[in-house]
Amino acid sequence: MTAIRAHRLVLWDIDHTLVDYTGLGIGWYGAALSAATGAEFRTPPDFGGRTERAITADVLTLHGIEPDEDTIQRMWRELIAAVERARETLPEEGRALDGAAAVLADFAETDGVVQSLVTGNLPEISLHKLAALGLDEHLDLEIGGYGSLSARRADLVPHAVKAAETKHDTEFPAESVVILGDTPHDIEAALEYGAVAIGVATGRFSAGQLAAAGANLVLPDLADLSAVRAAVLGAP
Image (cartoon, rainbow, N blue to C red; front, side, top):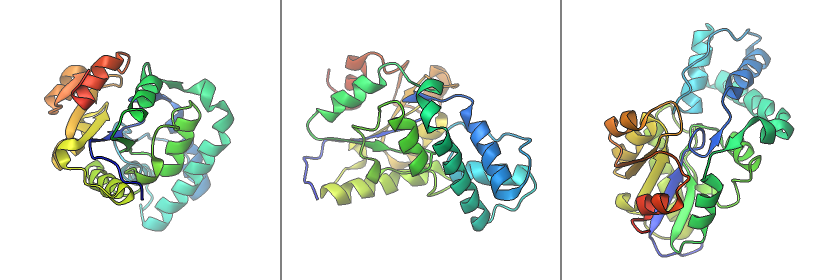
């Protein structure tokens, strides 16, 4: 264990908060569905802010397949394989959103800040998406809350907090936990836990929609480092 002074546990969403891989998920799910079940992908699910467990269950149900645990696990194995086959092209097909790299690097140098994830992605896919764009270096991916855990995004938050507390032998009170994401699901998950909810309006939801979901603060993007620091750390 590495003891640190409790200050902030910063938990990031991935898609449309740190990175943009628009359009690739449908192809990966299509390949996974075909390989795992033999079915042809016809109807896409709602991806926005939802967990892989919820999305996978929806994909199976939409295609007339019972979403039992064995089938979900087969789907995930094939989904991971599809992303791994695409690893070489991910840097060209995706992009890091403005300011993401600078913010992650800055927080990594800030005393008492631990950075990890609360994401709907599976752990393996999270790593591939971030590493392809050089964004994995400053995030502790061992202690994140991932989409394999639950269909409810809010369930991922206490898991990530507990893992961080255990690893760092310190407590992170709810008010010291900051969650950043681009969807109302991110905001609702943060508020249910009592964490600080920061919306980042770089996805399909507007600043107004994120504010209406209850965000404590909404950023237009991550490009202004001083604004992000003020929002997350309460200091310039």
